[in-house]
Image 1 (cartoon, rainbow, N blue to C red):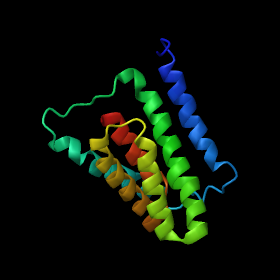
Image 2 (cartoon, rainbow, N blue to C red):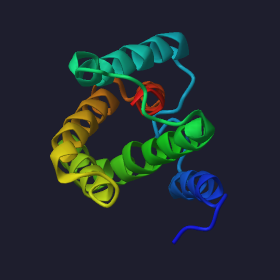
Image 3 (cartoon, one colour):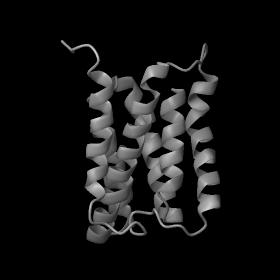
Length: 156
């Protein structure tokens, strides 16, 4: 049983703990450099729109996230992206190239979500992870996936 008032701090700490995975990596190696930042931010909004398409066609689509958890959702989204498509992607890319980085981060991210999402949702999680990993590879960018993930988590 959860103690009242512990969910929000736990989620914030979880997001921060995930971000620690990037400790020691150069920002550019994580896809967090400053080159073409405006385009990368715009790309993030485009990714967010694509990630929201399934919800847009769902009947009765409405945000399900309570407003009180919005900051926690942002922290978790950023932490997941920095950990999975930042540090893990860079490590797998060094170990075996882009195919291992794309496939490995997508599969591991989906497995991590199996702990908190119903099985019927994992296909969408996999597709979103693959889209974000492909963006990370094609653009050498993590800003876009962070923004897209934040938008999706706030709206879904």
